[in-house]
Each structure stands twice: as C-alpha cells, then as structure tokens.
Length: 397
Image 1 (cartoon, rainbow, N blue to C red):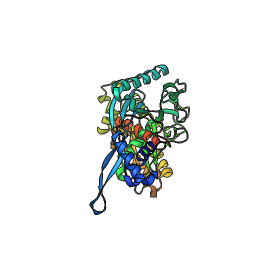
Image 2: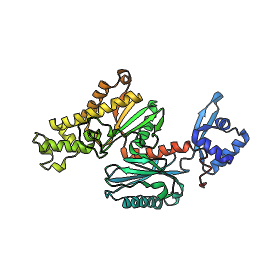
Image 3: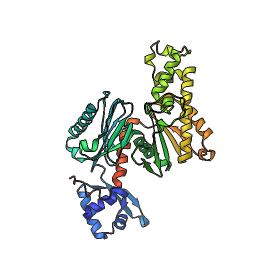
Image 4: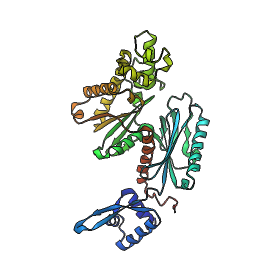
C-alpha cells in the first residue's frame, strides 16, 4: 500500500488524530508525515478538525478524513415505501427522498431498486462517482455474507434473490432494527452507553442490539427475530408457521384486528364514535385517541400487547444486561399507557439487580432519518474494519 493511502486509512479508522499520533500509529518519520499530510490536504482528502492547546500555550492540529471524500447510499423498504438517502462519511444526510411501492412482485421490486439507484446517480450528477457503498435495509430474512434476501416480511411468495450479484456494487444488507439501533446509539454517545437494546414495534417486531459499542448481527444477519418468540402456545398461527408468536399479540396489525374483533362482538367502545361506524377506519391513531378518551376496549388490547412486549423485554434484560432499552416504530404513538405497561412487566420479571439503573424509553429519533443515518454509520463501521480500505478505492480529485 502507498504511504499516502496508508496514512489516509489510519486517519479514517482512528481519527481525528494529532500529527504525533499519526507518526506513532504509522511508524513513518516526522518529515515524511509532514509532506504526506500537506499532500492529502491539497488533494482534499483530509481536513483539519480544529486545534487543541497543549503545554506552554502551543496548539496542535487535529486531522480527519474529509467527510465529503466519499458518499454512502442508503435504501430502506418498510413494506409500503422506499426511504432513500445519501450521506457523507460522518453520516450527514446530503440527499433524500421517498417512493411508495405496494406491489408484491419480485421482478418489479428489483426493477424499482434499480430505478432508485439510477435516480440517485442522475440527481447527484458530478457527485455520483463518490458513492462507494450502498446499504439496503428491510424487514425480512437475509444472508449478509452472500448478500441474499431470503424472505420479505408479510410477502407470501418470495424466491431468494442476491442483490450483490444483480447490482454488482458494494451492496450491504441489514435488518431495519439493526440500523435504527446503530443510529440510536450514536445519538446517545454523550450518555456513555455501551450496551443498548432497540426494539422496533410496527407491523413486525424486531430487535437491534449494540454490545460494548458494536452492533451485533449474529452469524447470518438475522439476529433479533423476537417477533417470533412464542409467548402463548394457544395463540393464533403466525405466518412463520408457529402458534402464539409475539407479533400475533403485539404487532400493529394484530392490535388493530383485536380492536375490530371486540367491536364486532358487541363490546361497548368509544372508538365506534371516532370511526363513525366504519370499522375499516381503525388504525393506531384512532386507538390512541380511544385510550385518551378512556376507552376500555382500546386500553385492554394495548395493555395485553404491552404485557407480552414487557415479558420478552425482561428476558432480553436478563440475557444482555443493557444500560437502556429503547422502543421505536409506529406503535410508540400509542403513548404512556403502553410504555408504563411494558415497564411494569420488565421490572416484575427481570432480575432486580439488572433493573436498578436500567432506562426504558420510547425513541425521540426521527425514524426516517434514523434509518438513513444508521445505514450509513453501520457501513462506516464495516469500512473501518477493512484492512486495505483506501488502497481499493478509486482516487477522487
């Protein structure tokens, strides 16, 4: 590897760094390092990241890789729409858009991804050559090593597809809760948290975990399928084939269906007035309003869902001993009733010593931006593990 590339890589992986630290980590002499730093600054590959006053009032410059040197593209599919964004090397979003897609057709799905990639390249024009990695996140089953999507949540017919082979790019696959966990961890760095659990509560229920400051994937990238933990063997059959999965009690669609069933069975409910007699208008927002109005049916359905989420969360606390559990997803809109029920069962069923300083909160993060930034930050983490990172990339002038 050329010395310039080696220094660039050292600064990217461990920076911002003082000149002395660069010398120490590279083993290259002071005079040569001075010339390389000057060259990298002139080429626009590194920039100064401020100064720190040292002994006798002397200031030392910190150096970091120019965030604008390369870009990362993030594409996410949540089952009804694509969320797309491009960030710099610090996760700053420089471009984003959304596009609806509700057709359960694999050929159209692949075509849509290709169309999105082409749109990004067209819109960014001169900057498109800077995009070196693409991350794709979605709710489903993946093989991160092969780059295959093995299944997509709630799609009945799906044949495994390999996106890396199709698009022939540096293409990474992630589960949505994983990238959201990474984004949440970044936001909370000031809290000095090292172990974080992120639970996504939507149509599906998923888990992202940061352990000792690093995102945990499992062997194939499918870690965290807590929506398919069996919480009641007498429950309904799940699309995964088992009976009584957590998603059948606490998934968004299941909660809505349970409220509908209650109304069909003649249970008195304030929500009947809210929906003006049209049962198809019931959604999470209407259920939230029902709870705020003291509706017993809505309260009982949400309390039951919170009970099972709390029980599974208590199990996770006993296993991982995190500093914090953060809940995200559309179901968090329901509000404090849901969260207080979850907290009750966590503290009831997890070991008391593990709950002593445990934080249990709803996320305040913008989910769409979190997905884009989380995808970018996760790829940046992977890049920092690359042994010959910048030696493999085309120089950008």
